[in-house]
Each structure stands twice: as structure tokens, then as C-alpha cells.
Length: 308
Image 1 (spheres, rainbow, N blue to C red):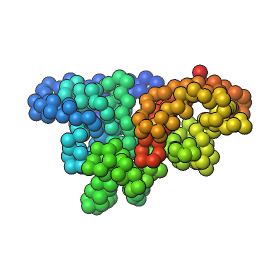
Image 2: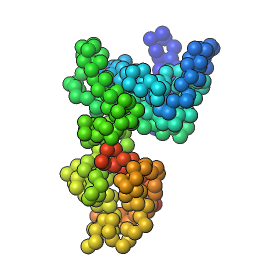
Image 3: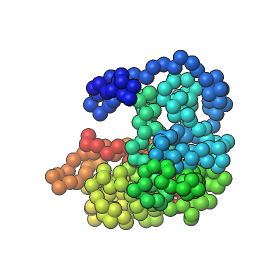
């Protein structure tokens, strides 16, 4: 596809199924200050990249990333220059590549930062946070000039504080703030299927949009259910019920969730096969989840739910 820009000559952009394939000219020069700065940041446990968009949502995300990294948690977070990381394979990209924990703070659901960096680092899996789900505003607004600067700053601080609390990287831990943070609001901002569960009894208290779409259910159809009932596992509908049926013994998903509630330890990419009951019959699915304790609740992230 040939595109002509304002200067008269366009560049060729090849399309490949769901991808745009572009050529980025290598930089003729390199900034020593940038590389030196990146070298000094590499020991920090959390790396934050942000979409840096020039619209209102992008500006709020940009300011939130700055507040998080330079004010609330400067000793624990490294702030990425997205342009440098995307266009040059030097210090900034290495920070992203080698991050112990990588957060992509996106202004909106388009997810520019994570899509860009996935294009230059194979297999990158950042924790994507959609910033505009963490504050309330008139969603018909688009431009930065459409909101007063002080209101933009207030929203940015709200986003930054919620992220700091959620990840335990601010002055207060998640446990200290669990009564103040609305987890139902929080999981809406996570761009992955999430179930929020209570420990006793082990039931789903909420789910985000991605999870509801994955399981083809409404929120009212999952609230108060056990995990297996949400997944439509055949053993969840026996007389004994989900988690108590003899076929549930040794279920890796169940054991991981119980252990997270009991010990507070997270579990990553725990897999099992389930017999899933659908209208057209019973099918085997591979279910893979990660678990994490948040206050008195547990986040269950669905990594995979596919027919085997």
C-alpha cells in the first residue's frame, strides 16, 4: 500500500494478515545520556512504559507514569522512553527486555505502547493497565485542550496512586490499602480475563469484561459462583459440587487458588484439562491461570482457555 504524506513522497507499508510491517531507519546518532540513564535504572524491580499519546487519555496516562515513577515510587520503578525503546536497540529497549516486572500503562484500549514494543521484542508480555478505566470523566472528550490542566493532573494522580497501591510499590502496601481500593473498578482496567474471588466460601465476586466475553456470560451469571461453574466444568454440577466432587481432587487450578488464599503466594501459568459442558456437548479444554492475593481476595487471571 502506497501512502503519500504531506511532503509528497510516501513510504511503503506492507500488510501481513493482522500486522503492519514497517521499516524504521536506524538512528545515525545515539544519545549517551539516554544510555547512561538506562544503565542506572536497570536494578529497579518494576519497569513502566506508557503510550505517550497526544490525546487527553494519553496525556493523563503520561502524567500518571511520571508521578508513579518520579514521585510515588522512584526507588522501585524505571520510566521508559517509548520512542527510544521502540526505534533503537539500546539501553531503553534493554530495560524493557530484561524487566523483572513490566507494566504497560495505556491511555485507552488501543494499547499502543504494548503493541509497539511487542513488534520489536518477541514474546513480550507486559501487565497491561488501561488508565481511562481508573478515573471518571466525560468520555466524549478527546483533546488535551478539552479538559483543564488541573483536572488532568488530578486524574493522573488518581491513576498513579491506584497503580502504586495495587502493586505494593508506593508508601503503603496493598494490604494496608485494601479497604480503600475498589478492586471491582481495578479489574476493569486490566486487559486480560480476570476473575476476582473471595476465600470462604470460594466464590467469584466479580469479573472484568474480557473474562465475561471469554466465557460468554453476563456479570450476574458469574457473581456468587464457584470457579468451575464459571468455566462450565462438568464436575461443578454434580451433587457434591465444584471443588468437592471426587474428580476435583488433585485439580491444579483448585489447589493453586487455595494455596494463594492460605499462604498469600502467587502461582503463574498453572494448567489443567477440564471437561466443559456446552449446549452442543462436552468438550475438553485446556485452562491455564495465574493467581495473586490482593487484600482478602484473589485475582485469577485466565492465561488460556482453549479446546485441546
